[in-house]
Length: 185
Image (cartoon, rainbow, N blue to C red; front, side, top):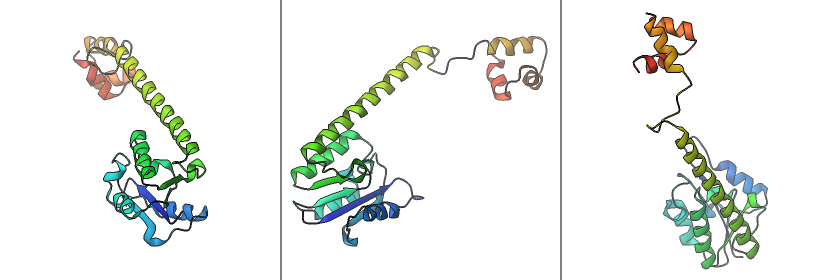
């Protein structure tokens, strides 16, 4: 391998990529300052559309290695991460992620790891989708949260007894916004 390039990314201005660079150096990677590329950009932005990532890949050649501290620095979306690694692999650029024991993600073993990670991510997306559908099925027709059992009846009973909203708060032990929400139903 010719040269080592490193990439760091944070999502907010309050964060810094300095700790990512230090961690990579502590793991034994010798990273020259002109081969360290870092930026503040959302992980949801495709890697090849990020200014510093794109500038870095423009300078890379076959045999070079890209190292990141964690795979999620390449992106939040698994499909984008896989596509980015594939693009780099086609150019003969090796990709390593320290959090995956530094396995070359462009090798057969690395591709296997990525395939498993992609399958787990797809499974989790499907589970979230299923749980969301189940929750919506339980919710009321408006698509909102299911009403707490009997809250409206209790509030209406206080109202019919002539209690004020503030008195109903004390009587029922509910918050004023909850009382107001159920007051005119």
